Amino acid sequence: MPTESLSSLLGIRHPIIMAPMFLVSDETMLVAADRAGISGAIPALNWRSNELLDKGLGNLVSACSSPFGVNLIVNKSNPKFHDQLEIVCGHRVGYIITSLGNPAETISRAHARGIRVFCDVTNLDHALKVQALGADAVIAVNREAGGHAGPLPREVLLAQLRAKCQIPIISAGGVATYGLLQESLALGAAGVSVGTVFIATHESPVSEEYKQACVTYGAKDIVMTTKLSGTPCTVINTPYVEEIGTGQTPLERLLHRHKSLKKWAKALTFYKGMKALEKAAFSATYKTVWCAGPSIAHVHGIRSIAEVVHALTAPPSEYQA
Image (tube, rainbow, N blue to C red; front, top):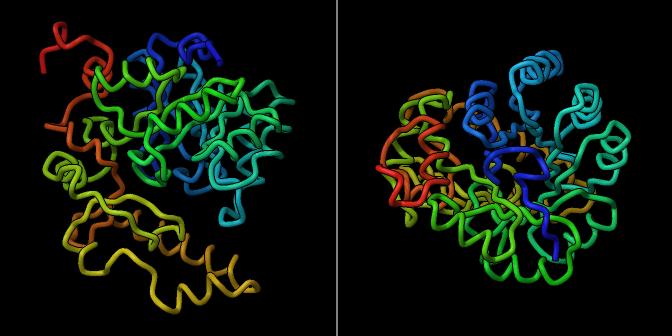
């Protein structure tokens, strides 16, 4: 069983990654995370051009005292992948998080530049494959995660990975309190990746309506949809989501089954879904499609990132909500 903690692996005060959240994470949030003693990560796709990605990473390298990470979608739905990988490697970021694809090329090129690679996994089979490819850690995405959640409970997934993996395991999903963080560490996680509770923060760039939804709605209001990216994704069940439903149309299902059209259909669904998320994140309309996980049950107000980190890391006797 791997024993190195995320704190020692990255040289940070607390074993926490602020998860990369599409259209939520930005430079301001990552700098605030760095100052709060954790590591922030950001999707490369949050910069709308390669030029902005290059400039943004330069800003973060200058502003952050500890390693930060960049999330790359490494499958064919991301036509920018190869350019993004080149730019990210050029800045020698602390680590890359790979999602939704084969990380072999990313691991090879990143390691040549001295950059660690952490791979999102949802099951043991995938974890063993990326371990064999040379991944430096796995991010075990469980069914409590926001966005692209996995199918397994945290306890089951961590137990399976602990038995076979020789690299650190970072647990992703459901951590929103000090007690839940300690439980994950006790189950053998080297650290945790936390997203949802950082959405409703002062530093977050999303609309006030999105933030307030994280306060107002609860775990029972989180539903899974395939309309956003073609891959099951958790969102808040707003009136708009109720109106459009959460499953693909018959035409969408037909295209995904047709082998010669499947990759193009998936790419189209991804593009359309991401555009819907972009509109929901930054404009106050009733047509809201907001990603979040069931840990919004623990969000009771809009706080600073430093306050969220303190709530996660200070025993209840030391923390006053």
